[in-house]
Image (cartoon, rainbow, N blue to C red; front, side, top):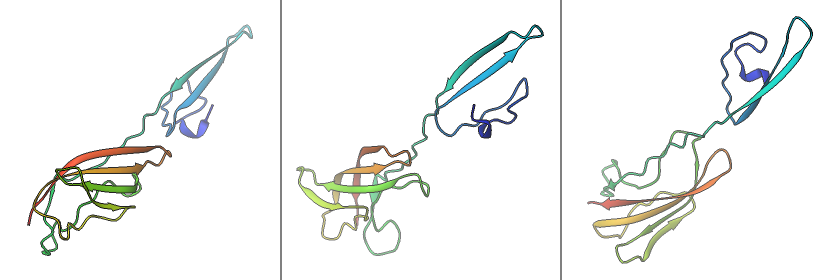
Amino acid sequence: MPENTLECAYCPGTIAWPTTTTHYTVSVEDSLGCTEIAGVWVTVRPQRTVYIPNAFSPNGDGINDVFTVYGAAGDFELRRLMIFNRWGSLVFESTGNPWAGDSSSVGVYVCQALVLWPDGKEEWLAGEVMLMR
């Protein structure tokens, strides 16, 4: 039993705060010395918080001048960012850098992002973004 994730490891009732999927066991002995052991798996689903903006304006005003995928610090690592135009041609690709929209025309683009979550799993995310000037 991982005691460090329990409020009280030896109390009849307790609160658990596991950070990963964990198996807890309890052993009970009655007044006659009979022992019973039971267990339960507590499944922890990772919270995956990510924000893909749907518009940006690379006009040099310092507000929304680049496009990238956002999340809280440490939520994920942006491994790859790809931007496609409406005809499916790749117009930008990087390994974590934001898209500045440099010479791209105003319009809607498709983005694909490969992110690495803290638990080691990789996931492809996709969305659409409007480039405005």
